[in-house]
Image 1 (spheres, rainbow, N blue to C red):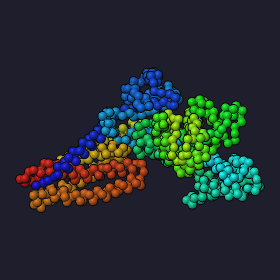
Image 2 (cartoon, one colour; image 1 turned 60 degrees about the horizontal axis):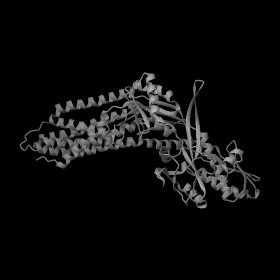
Image 3 (cartoon, rainbow, N blue to C red; image 1 turned 90 degrees about the horizontal axis):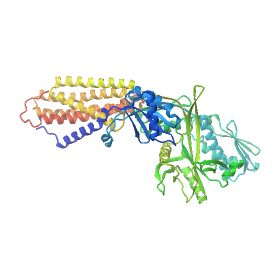
Image 4 (cartoon, rainbow, N blue to C red; image 1 turned 60 degrees about the vertical axis):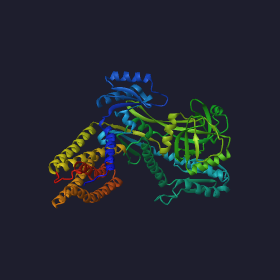
Length: 628
């Protein structure tokens, strides 16, 4: 008697139910929409709704709905043409107070979202998306590194108890150290050599062709020269660190398979296929917000501003929210670059805060400082670069406004090192700052040189053609197998249909991106699923021709064909893994669909079709022939 365990039927039913649930969101089309995000200081309110409605009415656009979503205002529109018109009308109407960006809004019902069921992410070639071209300010990266050398030189001399007159930077980026006593030159030269060589990184043997810093001694003056190789390395490192940081920031957005690559000497291309929130993407990618921890210098800040007599070790900052000036030390105790982790928390009063973890070097520096300064004041400087675009003589001029604000100074209550908490931020700022610090700090500022929104019209045609190709391949297989294998051909077609359903469900669950090459992988998985069923059906026919009873032929056919199916699919699976590991772009999209299709086809061919055969023929003890 042909047998199949009941628990396997339960597993199959469970798999079918889960597949239907998580594939279902793909049937709901997305609404073309325009997303409006307020800049700091502005809000989503009734006045904004009226401004939006007036702008849409003036442009002759009728919106399907205008609704608030999280911290954004979403304008749903009936067509892509209406989306373009609305976007062009709202941008000048709202000005720089709000970020206006085209988007695709989900129409998936809330009850599906409760199960975290979401549609597959489509690639740039299927759904459209956003394309950024960013330019890296390499001069700012160089300035930042040289300023770091200057500060390291001052601190080194101070710790070595060597008195200096000045530590200055020349136009050619050389650092000139003038000592008060020429007798200290050799000691200062040795200490600076150890400190700066370690901080430059050029002492590392891993840097091929790197040259050490040069030191030229003349009387009581030491000139530290940065070789050309070091300057080039700083510029190159800035690009590479920015690319790594961008990848981390895009991961914070949850964008699947982004394209982030270098273009030329100082530009980076970022493509976000199937992006869900273009405003948030631009804000996070372009942001260079970070923080610096500085000690408060005692003195009357208002008087220093009035007279212009600022202590040499201090710099004047403005407290946020109009709190007046404050004197902070030029020495940075720790900065966003030295963060290991940052997450949003609350302080003792239940207000938003960011829990910060520093690396070991910065943690030790913070520990040394707080050990000697318990009871003194320390402040956090919040630095934000805001890109701005103005029109001058009919041409766009891009500038960047740097905004530096000091948070209210806090008293150091006790000694701490690498773990501490930053307070004084509101909820939105705490969330954004934690994301940026987790993603890493940009080595150099970046400006948006080009932004293109790729519309989904061409992608819609690709989706239609790809879907039609997969559908035709399935219908052809259905017709052929039904005619050639009769009842077992019907089993094959049911297994094939479930295979497609499972592929869509699995890719939706894991947020994989479906691209145009992905459709090719899907068609290939259909063919491989058919191949497995052909092996089973032909094995059953061989057993029948050998005179084996029908029920035994079914059992033997599945048992003997299963090993061959596993072996053949394993080699294809390894090829798919290799494509994914070593391929880029379209190859990865093809490999993902292929791998998922192989895994699901083995399950449907070996388990599902056998369950159907057992269900139909299992209890027929006097079975004399099979419809195969």
